[in-house]
Amino acid sequence: MEQYDFETTAIRAQMERSQNAEHSAPIYLSSSFVFETADAMRAAFNDESDDFIYSRYSNPNTQELVQKICLLEGAEAGIATASGMAAVYDTFMALLAAGDHVLSCASVFGATHTIFTKYFPKINIAHSYFDADRPEQIEALIRPETKLIYLETPTNPAISLIDLAFVAGIARQHGLLFVVDNCFATPYLQQPLRLGADLVIHSATKYMDGQGRVLGGAVVGRADLVREVYLFNRITGASMSPFNAWVLSKSLETLALRMDRHCENALFAAEALQDHPALSQVSYPFLPSHPQYDIARRQMRAGGGIVAIELKSGYEGGKKFMDALRMIKISPNLGDSRSIATHPASSTHCKLSEAERLRVGIGPGLVRLSIGLESKQDILNDILQALERAA
Ligand SMILES: *Cc1c(COP(=O)(O)O)cnc(C)c1O
Image (tube, rainbow, N blue to C red; front, top):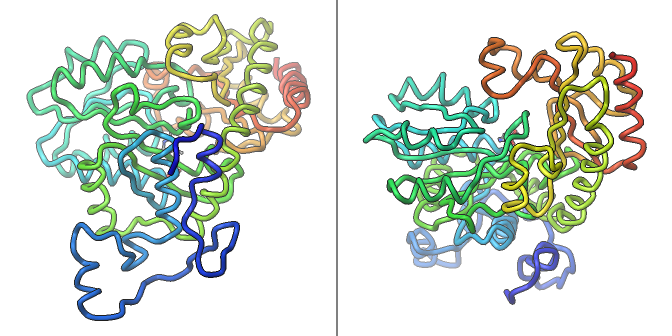
């Protein structure tokens, strides 16, 4: 494809038309594909072939989606997976072996944390956590058996930022793989591969779909690493369905447009809330008061759609705030056209001790707001009236 800007690529990167000359890509709901001859099938099983064989391996719709995400992230290669967690797990299983050690940012997605703490010990893979606010801790935590550095930025749910170029430098210097979960920022706002990451992981369930309909994931980046992840995925079966790939490919056509509005609405809310008397903190990457504002300006195009607020009234106040919301829904999801609120201390992170929560920046009154695409004034009004009733 010709070199186009992000918005154009997201719309114009699509599979070749069939003999029906359709304008919009069709869905290929076919579990397998047929061959003219035994020799043709033999050739398809050659490792270098990209013929379609079986939809657990790949499919025209998943291929279209993957090619689009690769263009948007600046990646050599990629694969689509059934969910974001399949992308995370496939990556670890494909690239790590018993005895290896992983260094990860302490504030990672809950299910990723569970892989580290519950399932890795079973297969003798060790992990250490560094604090998102102190990436300078990383070097001291590197061991001879360390294989990979893993992180998310902005972090969930506290919205801390990690300097990607800085961590990439450490990874390069020590010969470690560097993997970034870029789900919160999307390739529109941040492109970790261009800053030195080896692989980028996505939960496409979030902003890529953006309308709360389908699950999906992707791993994109260095071709030799993606190949290993692909082989693991095609054997173990967490493949993306062609239908979900079709939905997601359409969704990407509006990603830039949607992200612009998510960012505009979130910045509006963050600015309006930052001096609110009921709040002790408002965390948003593009607020100059954010401790890593300089990093945000350097590595992100805009601040994203998530705002974290800390209620002075603590745990009970946080729950009261949630119950007082009228339009914004209580849900663990994020990155949707509909605004969503989550109170991590009473929900997604309730199994952690208070000390563990504080380590990852989750105070008792922290509420994560996934700012949607409704009118920014309606969103703010709902937050303000709920704050008044929760104080
Ligand atoms: C949701 C999420 C995941 C997991 O994605 P699923 O599609 O739900 O499996 C991983 N990382 C981050 C940062 C997420 O927000």
